[in-house]
Length: 165
Image (cartoon, rainbow, N blue to C red; front, side):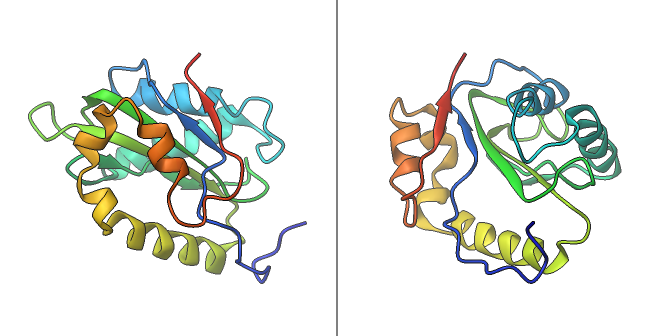
């Protein structure tokens, strides 16, 4: 069992990269991404995780900046940190329809007891999002080699599942 005090030496690599999101709105994108976790060992209840993310998203949009959204929730529906990167070449409106669209959607679930682990993860993710690679996210998401680019990021030595089905 992973505890809050567990060693945080894992590479910053998502459980899943979805290279072509089919969804056209944020609710569809969240649902589509969570559906990919249906048989994932770290997820106890996909419906409860989705409900927690929807509840959080209704409080305040999780679009971080032009091109990037971070729908997330602390929930007992997951038993450790799970996360995925979804790519939308067309972009998905996470705020208002006239706001810049999100091309990179980072979906995160973490149990409520893992507060320090979550803060370390978000800190590492924020550093990556400020990196040179992340600055070109809208263009990156349109690149045919986006999955290869994400897999080649530093500390990406773990296997990444790439699906577009």
